[in-house]
Structure formats: structure tokens, C-alpha cells
Amino acid sequence: MRLFCEILSILLPIFYLGLVYVYYMIFTGKHKKYEQWTKTLLLGLLIIHGAEIVLRQLYLKSMPLSSTYDALSFLAFSVLLVYYLIERSFNNKASGFFIMIFAFFPAFIAAFNHHWQPEHNRLLSTPTFAIHASLNIIGYTALAIGAIYAIMFLIQYKNMKERRFNRWYEQLPPVTYLENMSKRAVLIGIILMGVGILLGHLQTRQMFGHFFVKDPKVIFTDFIWFLYLVIYLGATFRKWSLRTMAYLNIFGFSLLSVGGATVFLLIKSFHKFY
Image (cartoon, rainbow, N blue to C red; front, side, top):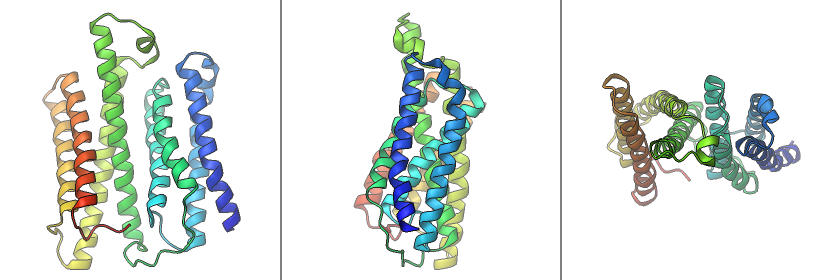
């Protein structure tokens, strides 16, 4: 079984690279015929990658995300999942090339670095933690994709305002699509992170007797989630301008990336496992 899992893990980045190629051909307009196959290819790779995750964890007899490279593999899977949901909703494939590049690199790194020793950390071996961490990773991924769409929106907005109808303008989705795709990605991130954070607090209460602990990683994650919730509600009900929403989206993800790296890597936390 291990040999089969290793072969499947190595094949995954090849499959992801194949999707990068398909979306590149669509983006450049060289083979529009591929557009009719993208949903099938996305779903097929989702099933294959999901099966690889399940089989590897069955072999190890542990929960997913029990190592750094497990998390990277799941990150690639999350990018694929979120993009699949967005493409099904809006049926616009012009941004797929950039999203697939974003998915390929963590899949490539993880494929050649998996550990094949079971995890013995009691916390990492519980289903509640696996669900909590999985939902948070998918939520973070959705916010990242929302930021990518926000950057594309600003590029298209500037091209349209300056009447620069160049190749980028022709190939990228229209601004209305980019706005809605960004908002949908943020909404997915808010919902999944909200559930994941709630499960984390419930597990904290079970372990330490308190629903909330003064831990920098927990505080930062709660703050980021609340910030995105305010941004989304403001854009929805206060009718903030499209550019304001895009800039706030990029600001939120920049804060998540820089602040998260600082808190997670430099500040001592009970929440650090790898």
C-alpha cells in the first residue's frame, strides 16, 4: 500500500502541471476547445488527490495535516476545491491559469517530502483537530484566492479607465466577474474559517477548561476572521465602492500573510505543532 501511495503522491504534481497547461492554453486563446473539459478535469483531480490523502492517512493510521508536508498537500487540494466551486458558480475560466500555478507549487513540494512515520502527538491524532485544521486551511486558501481576484480586478479596472484594451484586458475576466468571484471566495473563507475557529475553541475548552485562551496565534486568527467579516458586511450592506473592497481585500490578506508569519514563527505559542 505504501508503494501505491508514494507513486500516487509523485503523480499528483504531474496532474497539476497538466491543468496549468490546459488553463494556459485557454488563457492565451490558443485552444478554447479545452474549456468544455475543465470542470471534468478539476473534479477528476479533486477525487484523485482526495483519495491520495485518505489512503496515505489510512496507511499511517493518523489524521490528515499531521506534518508540514501533509499541510502543503492539503493546501494544493484546497486551492483546487475552492477554484472548482467558483468556476462552477461563474463559468469563467480565464483566471484558472493563475490559480492552478498557485496550486501546483505546494503539491510539487509535498510530493517529494512526505514522511511515512505515524504521528504520535495526541492532539494531532484527534478527528476534531483534523476537521478544525482542514476548515481553516481551506478558509485561508479562499481568502488568498479572493486577494488574487482583487488584484486582477484592479488591473482590469485600470486598463478600462485608461482605455488600454491590451492583451491582458482581453484575456482576464470582466471587472464584474472579478468582483463577484472575489466576494464569493471571501464568503467561502469566512464561513469555513468561522466553523474551524469555533471547533478550535471547543477543543480548547475540552483540553484547558476555557473557551478562549490568551494565545497570540488564537487571538490573531480570531482578529483576522472578524476583520474579513467586517469587510464583507461593509461591502455588502454599506455599498462600498468596488475599488475600496479590492484594496481592503488585499490589505486583509497582506496582514494575514505578514502578521501570521510573525505570530506563528517568532512568537511562542501552545498552538505550534510542526
